[in-house]
Image 1 (cartoon, protein in one colour):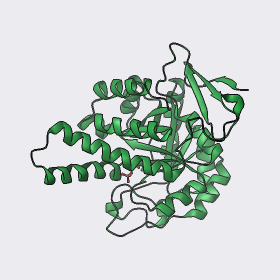
Image 2 (cartoon, helix red, strand yellow):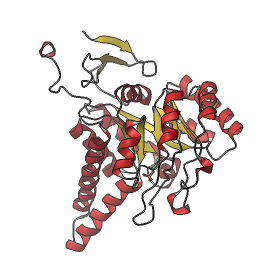
Image 3 (spheres, helix red, strand yellow):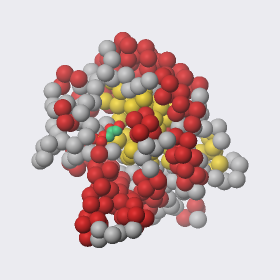
Length: 329
Ligand code: 13P
């Protein structure tokens, strides 16, 4: 009793929606059975419908890619790989990184999306699309409202016409180091958000409710505006995104998911656990082989990602599990 449906944005796929909630989505590529990078839209739709969130993790090299995809496989979880223009321009060149991720995704048994993280320039969006990204996050949040809306609408048309889904940001999620997120001056306004989504046709919206990017001061846990989040979800009825998922506190994160956040961006903490494991390994053995050192970083990042996936409820969404009925055997 599977409903077969061709994805709107990934014409290569047949998506089969199982009748068990827990089963999630099983899919096959028409040619050869390989699973490739998938659209973020369907993933987030499933997360929205089933009230959980999916990690979007920044990736700057092979160790990050292996840690992210390895964790997703271990947890039977969907995952989104983020690459920002700054990351690809300073280290993770797209010509090298995207084919590597694509190859890994083809051999994986869970859905993996590739997302342009914080695209602000038209040329960067085009470059990401040309390289095969499956989602564009256009960030016009530092612009005046009208300009953000107009640019987002244009990028949204471009992304959709190119087979990509799109996320935008309204309100502004700033930097923890600058103390951003504390004042509600840049939080997302509900009425504006409704109008923005209606006019831009974005598939997901990043909202500003009190988190910030980067590392918070020692011991500081942000205060999130849950009432605003509740109102945003009720008014928009679509996948919502939380940026600044590092150091935001487990209670905050889980409550945000319960109230309708479906994608959580995490970078700082993933990179930090990799770096710290390298530091400890070097202290323990200053002559450690470079390959072993890289492997240690990969393992540390993978462990962290696995536990975060469990925390936000994306684990075990893409596997047969206890609740799958006998007739599926
Ligand atoms: P953190 O670095 O605070 O986890 O934020 C990541 C992010 O939001 C990337 O878009």
